[in-house]
Image (cartoon, rainbow, N blue to C red; front, side, top):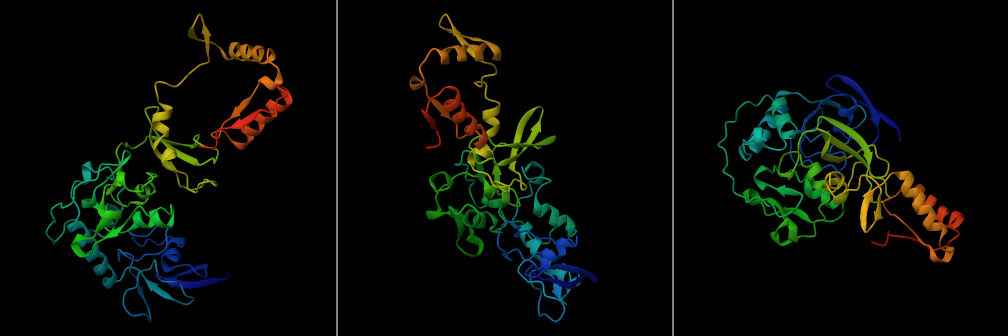
Length: 344
């Protein structure tokens, strides 16, 4: 794929052929505000916030949907561009609640960021009263349509990334909203609670029921299955308070299922977790050291014939660990009775 060169705000930018104007600007470190765009999704051009002015082109095209062309001259901060962006964001704010300080997306809200960039301190338009009830039926996250800016990132995510299609845009005009088939509750839909829609929502319309800002983050690997999805765990007071997919993870590239996103913290901090080996003595389990437990198990193994032994491996272990398990069964225990729980 050949390189092309264009000019953005007087700066020469070289990108691969096929890139959009927005991608060219981002590659050069030039900020263009946007709300409906996500690098994980197909260009949409719905929010109209990323409009630019291109010489020899009529109107103000959206930079996220306009292919970069060699020799193109782009201007991202003309008066006409600023006016359109300002008006578009003012219209969004007029339909948006003003509870920013208590919103779970405070300081992470992209509408907040864009409004600050455009210098919007107050709106000339009257505020619209909330008209939608909050869908709290999902056990992991809530859907508050009153905070929705109709960017369609959630519905596109559900369609393009997870290929489920549990939600879509319904109705038109002031009645337009994110809805399930038949306009029912999320819990009653085909939603698999993976949370990808929550991760892609730029505002607080889709938000986890429990979330706290972490004080530090730790890269880890999900232990629920053998895929090896990479996680970024948010830690606060030595407890996991948030989980997100690692975009650099080769197995998942930032994506997670319901177990990886919402099942880690409760699993890790469950009071029922074993913290040491237990050996039953006089009918009761008592704590033991690893050396005691391994010695007891080895003695038990040696008291049985190979055909009386079986090894059940785990789909939550890595391929390497499962290989060692079957090797141990065949080479050490001399049994071919090997199984795995992956059929679930």
